[in-house]
Length: 485
Image: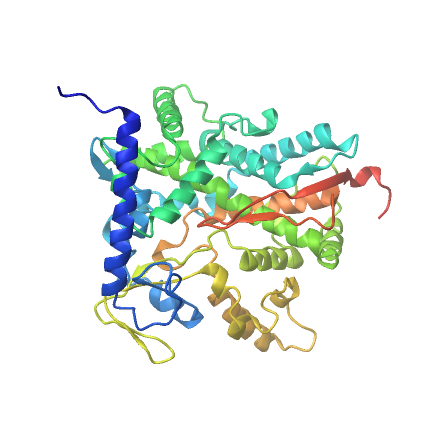
């Protein structure tokens, strides 16, 4: 008699096949890798048998240039989606420069600094909501709370507001009520791990028989589709006085570029905003506050700079004012150097010319190489012997330094900055992140005295493509109720 296998049995068989495939892949790739001559422990000689993680800042302009010879590797492909049995690439996952340019060209203007600033009122409203929740929940009894968690709720509500004019409601409910935030984090973990063996994605997430992949994020897709459909239906009724959001801009892109922008591409960008925009920004914010709270001299100096602006408790600091503060800029850049939002190599294939490294060794064509923002941010040739120290002043002109010397040093540091990637594949949403970072940090520091709940307890870091953080417990008091500091 023929019996049908149960889902549990199929899952077991699928898992066994995957484990066997991993073992077979490791044996074959290790024995045939062109990078075998490079030294390293047997089980830790590299992230993958065909990938070199380089620490040469001088190669940034070569590997991440704009000549399109250094193609993205297959590492990125599992970030693509399966639609009607076909792979659908997005702006991040596509390895084709031509496809990337076709997607980006009609939409890039909507991510410019000037365009993002047209939505500053929306940013103000979300930052104000964060302050309101802190005031109502934690100030009266001087309660300690996890600032890392609340910054996460804030950035997700922010990207909802900027994209759909509708915060997701995480701050009002006080937690990840629908599990989307943790599901997004786990999906990124899957992407980073499976990216080392891209073929596994076909056995796991894109398996047509039994899906053994990351948490299902289809509800985010369905929400975005519903928002797009509703907005298209309400275009005539939508008031011209309403401030546009990203969805409005993307629909404008459809109308202006009917041959290159369709509803599928709009959905592509909506999902990119939601699933990438919040997590990367909150990593930066958590890093900034963690470093400040661990370095009271820096916190005191930043307080002094911000408080000279004379803001009151009911005002969100405008970006134009926050961006003009040199020490806030230095703190932000130093924090992103020490804890970038991406902490794995940005992989590229070596072109047919091969690559000669600064030490004279040769990397053959077809090999994968990459520079890790976290590692490059600690290169002593750029940052000095104190590269592991949080020193915002390194971004400022020293008293005994001429302007010419300072500008030369600043160019060297800026040239080694891979926070948002580089070249034509630089992060399209970087202005969304930076504008709200400057505004949020300036506003929170101007309104509150912030202290660690326990000086002996450090924030926890979970390593991965996005090195996310948890457990930054603080106590906060309103400055207006403290008298003169």
